[in-house]
Structures are given as structure tokens and as C-alpha cells.
Amino acid sequence: MKNRFFRSVSRVAALIAALAVLALLTSALYVPAFAAEGDIAPEPAAAESAANTGKSDVSAKAAAAGIAVAVAAVAGAISMAIAIRKSVESMARQPEAAGKINSAMMLGLVFIETVIIYALIVAILIIFVL
Image 1 (spheres, one colour):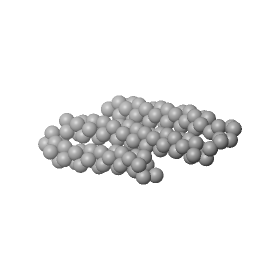
Image 2 (tube, rainbow, N blue to C red; image 1 turned 180 degrees about the horizontal axis):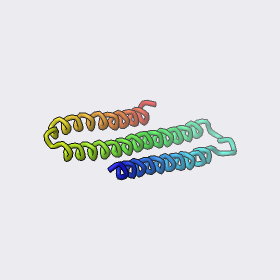
Image 3 (cartoon, rainbow, N blue to C red; image 1 turned 180 degrees about the vertical axis):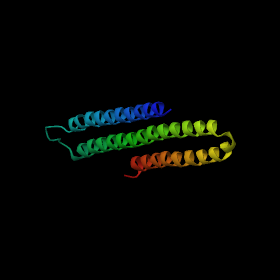
Image 4 (cartoon, rainbow, N blue to C red; image 1 turned 90 degrees about the vertical axis):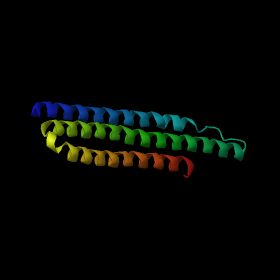
């Protein structure tokens, strides 16, 4: 039983590490894209310069909002899966406590989902307010 538990924990840790590397590579690829948006030669009109600054600002906001929601959703999905799996295992071990375990699991899932919704609200605020 313990060996299976440690295998599942190591799988989750490997998944989290892979997602962290993916996020790092994605952010590393964004840096040259944002740097390439600026022109070497000065622009003739100030209005054109302001328009280009606005475009890069919007794309940076969109990238930040997307990354925030993606990280929160992935972390929430992983934690929900672990919580559900553990509660089902404990209900199988002790069926007489299934009602209490189920209500505690549902409360925990609500808290996890609240964090994901907060990330979505923050992403919307990043896009429209900042």
C-alpha cells in the first residue's frame, strides 16, 4: 500500500515539475517576441508609437492572464483529483463514515474551486483594468 502511495506521489511531483519547466520555457519564448516588437529605427509619428505600445501592452496582459488561469486550473485539477481519490479510498476502508467523508470532501473541493475562480477574476481584472 505504501509503495503505491509513493509511486502516485512521485507521479504527481513529476507532473508538477514538467508543468513548471513548460511554464518556464513558455515565458522564455515570450521574451524575444516582446523584444522583437520594438523597431530599431525611430518612428516618424508619435501616434504610431503610442499605438504600437498599446499592442504590446495588450499582448502582455493577455499572456499574463492566460498563464494565471492556466496555472490555477492545472493546480486545482490536480488537487481535486488527489482529494477525490483519497476520499474514495477512505470511504472504501470505512464505509460507515462515508457521509462525513463525503461532506468534508465536498467542502474541500469548494475551497479549491474558489481559488480557481479567484484566478479567473484576477485575469479579467488584468485584462480590463490594468
